[in-house]
Every structure is written in C-alpha cells, then in structure tokens.
Image 1: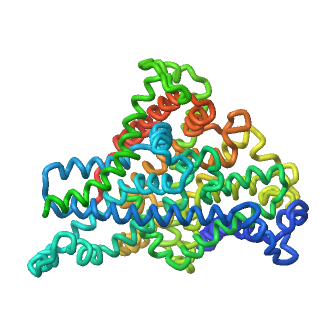
Image 2: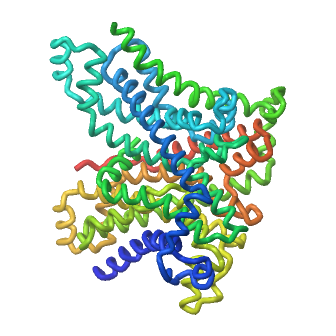
Image 3: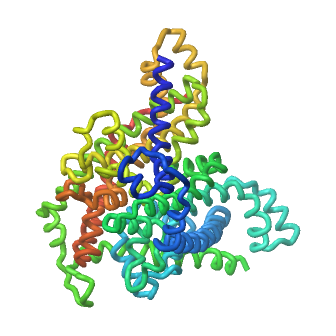
Length: 273
Length: 290
C-alpha cells in the first residue's frame, strides 16, 4: 500500500514535469528531429532556435512589452491599493463601508461581463492597442482583491505605533509612507506576488484590448506566443515555437523555484477571498 | 488636513476603478438590452429580445452544455485528486514531500497561454508527445488525431484543465491538513481504520470549509474555460468543445454583435451567482470544531 501510494505520487510528478522538459528539449531540436520522433533527444544544443524565436518571431519584443506593462501595472496596483486599503482600514468617515464594498464587490463579477463595454471605454479614451491602456486596465482589475486583502492586513497592525508617531509630529502622509507601509511589508509581498502572476499570465484582457492597427507590435507575451502557435501550423517552424515557449516559461519557473514558499502562500491567500 | 489626506488617498484609486471596472459592468446590462452592432453609433433598445433569442440559440445551448459538463467533472475530479495526493504527502508522511509540493505547483505559475500552446503540441497527431508515447509502446491504433475528432476534443480540454489545477489544491489541502492534530490519526490507526476510512471520516469533515471554497473556485473556472478552449481547439471541431465564454468573444469581436454578446455576458454572470449560491446552500453543514 505504501509502495503503491509512492507510485501514484511519482506518476503525477512525472505528469507535471515531463511536458515542461519535453518543451525545453524541443527548443534544442531540429524540425527533422521533432517530425521523426517526438521522444528523441536533440543531437546538440541548437541555440539558434532561441535566437530565431527571440528576433524573427518577435518573442523578445513581446517579452519586453509584458515586462513594461506588468512593471507599471504592479507599481500602480500596489500604490493605489495600499492607499485605499489603509484609509478604509484605519480612518472612520462617512461612506467608508460603501467604498469598501464597492471595491470588494468587484471580485464577484466575471470579467466576461465587462469585456464588451471595456473595449469601448478603452477605445474612446484612445488607449486601444496601447501599452498605457493595458497597464491601467490591469491595475484597475487588480484593485478589488488588493484592497480586500490589504484592508484586512492594515487592521491587524498595532495602533500604538501609529499613535506614538502622531505624538512625535508625524503627519498623515508621513505616517503612511514611513511607518505603516514598512510595517505592512509581509502583506504587500503576498499580494504583490499574487498580482504579479495575475497580470503576467493575463490572456483575455490583452487579446480583447490589443487590437487595431499596428497593435501586434505592442502585443504581450501570452498573445504573441499563441499567435506563434497558430502561425507555426503553416510555417512548419516547430523548433522555433518550442524555443519561444521555453523562453516564456523559464523565467517564471526559475523565479518560482527560488521563492516557492512565498509564491505558494501568496497564491493560497488569493484563494481565501 | 485630514480631509485632504483622505481625498488624495481615495480619489485616484476610485477614479481608476470606476472608469475601467464599475462603469463597464454597469454598461454591460444596458448594452444587453440593445441591438447595437458597434459600427454604427445608433442602436435601439430591444428590451429582453436578446435574452429571448438566447433561449432559442442552438449554438449557445451547445456551448452551455459543455460548461455544464466541465462543471460536473472539473471540481469533482480535481478535488478528489487533490485530497488523495495531499493526504499521501501530509498525513502518511512520505519521503520527498517537500519536493512533491514544489513540483505539483508548476502549472499554477505558468500562464494559460503557455499551458494551452504546450498541450496543443502534446496532442499533435504526428509530432505530439502523447502519440509518440503510444506508438513507442506499440499502441499505434490509439494514436489518433485527438483534437481533430469531435468525440475526443472536449475531453482533451477537460484533461488539461484538471492537469493545471490539481497541484494548487494539493498544496492548499495539504496546508490545511497540517493543522489537524496528529493524535486524531494515531487514535484512528489504533482503532484499525484504513487509509480510505481515515480520509473519509476524519480528514474530509475537518477540511470541509476548504473543500467548499475549492469547489466554488473551480466552478468559476468551469463556467469560464475560455482561454484554454480558445487556444487548444478554438471550440472545434464542429463546435464539439465550444464554451459560453468563447461564444461571447466570437459574437462580440468576430461578428460585431455587441448587444447580443453582452446578453451572453449577463447570462454568464447570473449563472455564476446561481451555481455558487446553490452549491453553498446544498453543502451547508455544521462546521466541525476541534
């Protein structure tokens, strides 16, 4: 029985890792090797596949676009989310609850409901197919969970420190930036990791919003990769596709391996909403 | 001073949120009552016509049926596998538990685009890993065109959705199981309870709230399913793996029928609410306190 359970555990471990290993191996194969036997090993490390994917298939550009959008969106999300959450958690004013539930209620709605109007809101602002437009939308859709999570977090912080800082002549702004934000670090890290993966892995929002003339130069990684998979069908560049996939996959996987504890707790926290 | 502070901290987030989240959601309900096609600035209010049309739309029902199947299978299979692996790792203390917990989580950090493209290649008839394996063990007859056959395409998609979600629930359940006192298991072992009995009689009741949350979350994924389906099969062949989200996307951005697409969105919204509410009602039981 004990042995049997080991067999199952190892089987699932193989099932999760083998496809990824297969993709990495494929990125070094020649198209011939891929076509003759899917389980063959590459004869040598063909880095030229990676180069082709990075430049000719524009994976490099898409990677950069993703990095730009997520950096901007994550900064904006964390700043605005922390500001709103802090005020909602620690200040009493009329309408506090209404604002709080307006934010948190956003978690209940499927993003599909918003797609059509969102497309036109973004288009009417002239932001369709632009990186700033996508950045703002990512940040806006990350706010509900961020506000929900951080409000709960700011409530747990001790009031004594805040009072002491106020006595020392610290203003509202100084209190937030110099005292409360540093104290909220663990919470910010958890929700930051959650938001990073949410934004980096977005698919629906970019394919709806990055349309229009010349938009393909500003595509993000998820979009560029699926387009490459469709094109590969009639261009027959299998190895280039595998290389593109590997380039898209490795940074996130490596980051996860280094920070796996934080990533797992960050994502588990997202589940409890 | 305090007022200025509150306003500077609340107004920017509210503006961003109102503009890109609240207003689209509100407009969706409005647009769903129009025959707007997007190109012309004019449109008429048609009341509930779009919803009446939805009821008679065979494509919509076909897609909805697939979401129903996802709703039936995805949560159950994922949760069962998750509980099974989590109890192996946590309760029965196998060697390498930490490694399993890290490895099982891999699909969770990959984007749906990567997972979709990867599995599309895995299923490929000639170059795919799956058929390669089948051929190498002499099962050439089983090496079919998985995604090209209406009988298999949907189940291929379901498999991917299970594959990409199990790991997360292994980690989640195993974290919850670690909070269960060891003495309970020791007592059960003394009473001669086997593993299955232990799982059903001790672990599951103590994890009930976590399981409920997991079910609702997976149900939401099942009602969506858009990205994986669009990338792997695009709903085909002959709509055999279509889902409602893909219907909406194609109706809006393929056919330009924005009014009708919004009606599909509204239907999805109420479907999500109903399913979540119904499930929580049905599975309500008293929480086991230790």
